[in-house]
Length: 444
Image 1: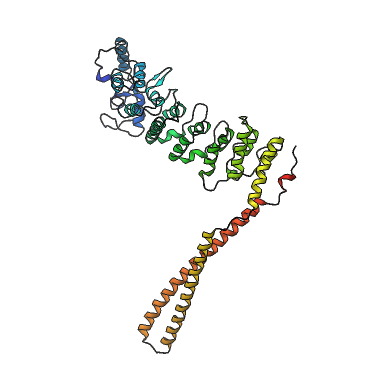
Image 2: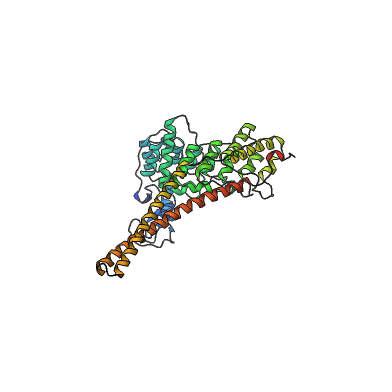
């Protein structure tokens, strides 16, 4: 880059981007701006940024005369103006002064190099937090690429860029950049890759559970999305690639995990796709995932059918080795379910305390009832002063009413605990069913 400095006319600089304009347009207030910048401004305001005059947001007139002047100026000073390559080099060398000078000499901060990409994405690939913040906060770099650009967002770059997970510094820088970028635009989390995959699915495929946990802190709903091309859920993806830790994480992310909810567009459960084994997992890895699904997450494979009306067990029986592996796990789970569950002493103690409280309340209520009846008899027989006795009677009746309400609440709580226990037992009996033992099935 030439060391000589040149004076860039103020009319060539966009008031919003502070850079030389490439596509200048005029608002109805008569001021010129870079088209992409003023369009973004008018999405949230109907006033001209310079004059604060109300403008027609649908009318932006190309400033062809100014554009011609800018083109002539750039052509005349071609050897003096900085190039996008110079900006990229400055970013890679962590040189903030050179970055500032490149931008002052005409390089658009959001401009992309044909093969190296944009400055912001290059900084993201290098996990350079300082340069990224400088480009965004000082020069207004966009964390989302403009229309017509083919580059991926900064988050895409971060999820695909090499990161030495053994280096605490690398992981810390990557996490800091991701949190910073998402704090500026959380909607980036749902942006898809060109192949239809997502940031979360990339984390799962790469077995990056640390990054997956962090992304779900911003929006846990991303785990519920199905991939548009394959129709897989995130659980399917983890199962297909044999990532046991992520399978456990997804299965325990919700307290009430239900395998029936994890079905893809073909109504296949994770066990269906594990048995089909499209990634050709080793026998050991396939068994480890199956053990996690069947024993740890309690997935049933004999009830849920796919679009071909086949259960996961139907598919397993087509191969003797797979059938033996799945059948062994199912028998083991069946035995564990048949064992009586240990009594929960804490629940028993709580119910005992509630019953004791109910007994005390009922006893107190009986005493107050007797007292009310005695007061009524005394008033009727003229033994006590009517006014004083009536007031005492009202106070006692109020106490009695409060006690009755308390008794009803305690009794309702006891009944609810009994009903919960009954329903749990009923669900266990339903799951066990009356099916034949696994040893009775024959292999095809």
